[in-house]
Image (cartoon, rainbow, N blue to C red; front, side, top):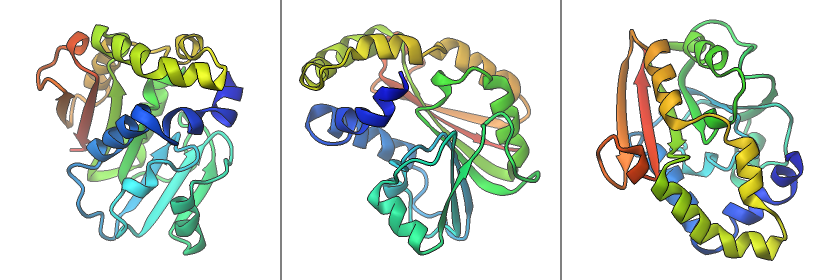
Length: 219
């Protein structure tokens, strides 16, 4: 499955076509409430090549892109790296190498449904977040009915062109159900303020939605 992310992920979701436009919409949705990140220390867990970085307001102080390995960065992320505003860190999300309350904001972009040690990762994210800091999370409504139908419709042609079986990749990789993830989030962040933004229907019906944007403010 790792071959898909090293060889086909960019081609599948970021290069062209409907899937590329949909991916852009999702990135923008996660940044909807953040017109400015002035002076902030931001940590993105599972940031990969830094595909989310171009959508983040550029007035942050430092952007830490954490993943299990150093990947070839997206061009915008490379620009920030040259300016010493972005650093890549190789580490596990469930054992973050940072002191308590190090960051103003933590980002999970399309990550939580992949993780094995999700509880440890979320506890760690809360630990390194400053008081009144924010955790921003994107969750696909997988295995919701609308999500599965549209994924099938709009990725079918592209996966055939690339010669990959994305449905099988997805079956292996999306190990965490959105309903379970939300229950876990409510438990771990029970002392904090949690806000949900469901799309396209602004109601908590995951079978009828494509994704949910979650914003958690640490009390």
